[in-house]
Length: 415
Image (cartoon, rainbow, N blue to C red; front, side, top):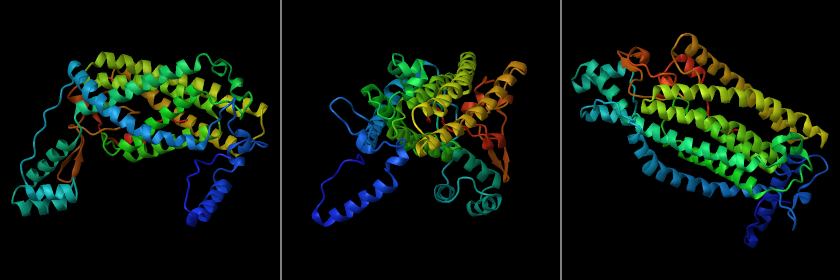
C-alpha cells in the first residue's frame, strides 16, 4: 500500500512511527475513501508494465514551487519589466509624505488609516492642522501601494504561465481518446496507467499554485487577500485529491477548460495597464465569449455529465465519487454567478457604452483609491476623470460595496 516513502528511523521511534502509519492508513489513506468498491491500494501498486498515481508523488511539487518563484523573479525582471517600458506603461505621480517621525511610527506600528479621534490627537501632538495629518496618511498610503509596473509584471507572469499551460494541455490531450469521447475517461478505472505527460501536467499546475500561495504575502495586496489564500489552498487540495483517486483523465479536462480563458483575461489586464484601451476592450469581449462557452456549456455538459453518469457504468458510488462531484457542482455554481456578473458588464458596454465598475475584478488599490477626509470615506469616481475602457475598474481597484460582496477568487485552475 502506498502511503508515502518509508524513512528509516532509530529503534526508539519505530513503534511510534508504526502507530502513526497505522492511523494514517485507517483515517486518511483508507482505500474505501479513495478507490471504488472492491479495489485496494495493493491492486494499485506499480508493475513492470504500468505505473499508477501515488500520494507520495505530490511531494515533488514543493521544491518545484520554489523553482517557479525563482523563474518568476527572473521573468519579471528581465522580460516583463522591459516589456512594460516598450508598451508604454506610465507611472502616476505620487506626492511624497513629508518627514513626520511621530506619524510614521503610528503608521508603521498601529494604524495606516486612523479614526477621526486619533487624527485629532495626532494633530495636537504634532502641532499641525487635522487636514494636514489626514493628507499625510493619504500620501503615505499611496507610497505603499503597488506601482502600475508591478501590476503589469504580475499580470505578464500569469499570462505567460496560463498561455503555456493551455497550449501544453492541448498537446497532452488532443491525441487522447477521452478528449473526444468522455466515456473513455472511465475505461479500466481506477487501474489506468499514469502517463509521463499527465504526471508532469499535474505536477506543474500543482507547483504553480503552491508558488502563488508561498508568494501571496509579497504580491500586490488586494481586498480579497483572504479569498485568494482560501482559493489557492482549495485548488491545491482538489488537484491533490483527483491525483490520488486517479481521476486524472477528468482532472486534465477540467484544468484545460479553466486555462482556456485565464490567459485572455491576464493579457487584457496588461493592455489596460499600458493604456491600450481599444485592444483591451476587444480582448475583454473575447474573454467573455470563451468564459461563457467553456464554463457554462463545456464544463457542465462534458465534465460534470461524465463524472455523474458515465462513471456509473464502470463502478458503484463511493466516497470519492460523491466528494468529487459535490466539489464540481459547487464550482459550477460559482461559474454561473461569475457569468452573471460578466454579462452585466457586457450589457452595460453594449447598451450604455461604458461600465461603471468591473463586476468580476479582483479589487486592487491604487493612487485613486478612497481618501479619508475628516473621518469619512470619500470615493473618487474614475469615470469622471478618465475613460479607461471596459477594464478600467478591473485594474485601478475602485472600492465599492458591490465589489466587497462580489469578489472573484482566482478559480480558473480549480478542479
